[in-house]
Picture 1: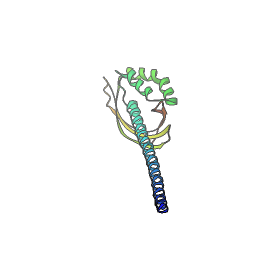
Picture 2 (picture 1 turned 135 degrees about the horizontal axis):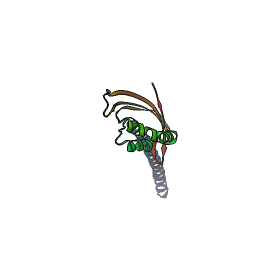
Picture 3 (picture 1 turned 180 degrees about the vertical axis):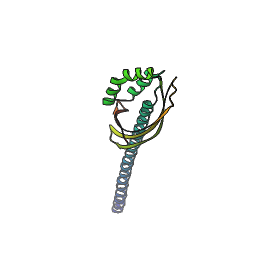
Picture 4 (picture 1 turned 45 degrees about the vertical axis):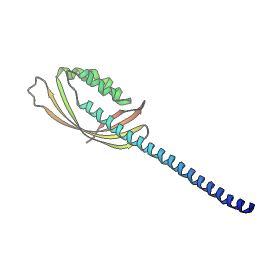
Length: 169
């Protein structure tokens, strides 16, 4: 009878070991799937953040008002980094004086954004925006302009900022 017990106990131990192995594999697979889902969610979140950042920057570029131009230009600088920020900073005073002197009012509309490419820290986006430009006190008719840009973005301190803007046709 001792042998029967010994034989009966061995298959039970083998079964428990096998089930434990299967359970461990399932848990490992579940952890891996959860990590992949988090990574994918992070990429999707970054994609949305890139498109939002490019769109906000474009809207800032096409929305200027001589009465609020200092704040308008600050928004452009605040949504940029690197070469783009340096360029905006260098030309801000001239743009501000021209905008005020000519009483320029630009009202822009963001039409579309699209992602071209993206890594963990850089991205390229295409942006379409239209603008109506008028001059307060002028008899000149308002002008419509249509902009298409390729924007390079960099992730800086967890935020996506525009580092380069190129007008495309």
